[in-house]
Structure formats: C-alpha cells, structure tokens
Length: 251
Image (cartoon, rainbow, N blue to C red; front, top):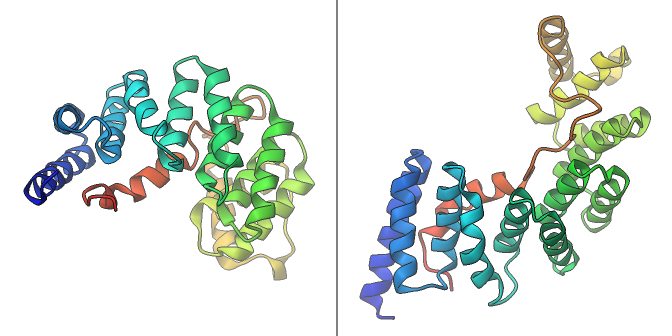
C-alpha cells in the first residue's frame, strides 16, 4: 500500500473516530466499512466498525470481522472485544473460551482479566471470577482497577471483610479516584460500618455523606443478586482511551 493510500485511510479513520465520539454511529460504520473493503485486515477499522455497530445495538455483526483480525496474531484488545461480543450474542461458551486464552497470554492484557471475570460473574460463577482477578493481581499487585473489581466481586459474594480490605487498598493506591471512594463508601453505608475518624480521609467522608443522603430515595448501584461487574467493565474504558491511536497506522 502506497504512502498516499496510507494517508487517505488514516484521515478516513480519524473522521470515523470523530463520528464515533459524536455518537454518529451510522456514519462511523460507513467509514469503517469503506476502509475494510480496501483492506479486510485493517484492525483499527475493524475496531471502529465494532464500536459503531455496538452503538446501534448490532454488536453481533462485528464478530466476523474481529475474528479475521484475531486469527492474524496476538491482539489483546481485539480478542477481548471479540470475547465480549460473543458472550453478548449468546455464544457464552465461545466468548469465555476466547477470554481465557487472552488472559492466559503473556505479557498480560489486563482488560481481558476484567472482562473474563465480569462474564463469569454474570454467569453466576463468582468464585472463579474472584480467582481470575486475584491471578491478575498476582501479576500486578498495585493495579487499582483490579483491586476495585476484586472488592466488588467479594462484596457480591458476601465477603464484606475481604471486600473492604481490597477497596481500602485501592483507595490507598488512588486516594482521589471517585469510583473507588464511592464503592467503598457505598459498602460502608449499606452495612452500617463507621470507619475510624483518623483512618477516614476527608474525600472519603464526603463520599459517604453523599451516599447516605441519597440512600433513602435511590437504590444501590447493584444488589447482591445482580452481576457485580458490568459487561466489559474495563474493556470499554480501554477502547475509549485508545481512540486516538486508531487514527494512526499501526507499525
């Protein structure tokens, strides 16, 4: 492919990313499909197409192009999204098998751990989901996102003490993360636990007070009977963060 063609596709991809950010999913789909007509193995165009289709509630249509990219070699981002879409298309066994393969690969791609754990929890396999996140933490002991996911899973499994340990560790590693503070504060409120004043940060205290004020009128984010991890808990954030790099040709 010539340099002029590369520049053309890079510009088209950037336009598709802009359309995706503006939630103009049909336009993003059209741009991505046009690129894939010329190059069926363009992984950035395949990812753009997948997200455009997901935005229109047609994620299952992105499985085939993602499978083509995944067969070319190791690509954790593509494989993780593929696994999530397979699960969403009621091919749960295939999706979980794909996510297991991706999570087992080294160096690790941590969004695959989150996605696999989320799908296992959704299928009622909470113990195994916890084991997956713990395996990720063994590889990256300081990862705040893994600690947050572990805390949510442990809480959903009824292990309040261990959940608080995981979430407190996450808070210590990221004292200004609202999602960590809110999750920790929510659990403290739900179970009537009052942290010791000298161990409670002002930010955490504000978070707890906010949750307490809203508690009588608002249900908790999720009950113990619901999945404690949303579909694609980290995958979605990872893809959103990677939107900028999609517009540049991959070396």
